[in-house]
Length: 122
Image 1 (cartoon, one colour):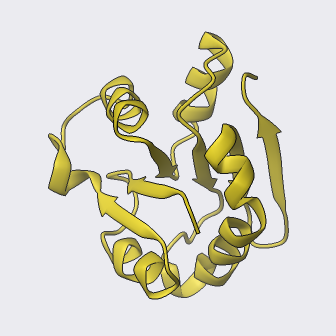
Image 2: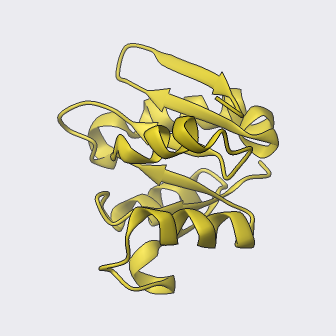
C-alpha cells in the first residue's frame, strides 16, 4: 500500500482511522491546512506532498479535466451516504485494486456497486 491520502473537509475525520486500520496513511485536511481553503489549495498541497485527494466533491475531477493535470490523483466517493460504515469496504477494495494506478496518476470514482478509473491527464 503505497499511496498516502489527504481526506477532504467534506468527508468525516473517521476516514483517517478507517484507512489506517487497513494499512493506508491518511490525514484529514483540517489537521494540515485551513478548513476554509479552496479546492485548488488542497490540490496544490496534495501534489507538493505526494498525497491522493480523497473527496466527495465533484469539483476535484472537474479541475483535473479542465487543467489536463497529471496529478495529484483523486479518489472520489460517490453516493448519498459516504460514511466509513456504509461505503468503507468498497473504498478499501478500490484502494487495494487501484493503488498502483493512483500512485501513477488517476481519477478513481467509487460507488457502492462499481468503480470507474480514468488515468491522468484527463
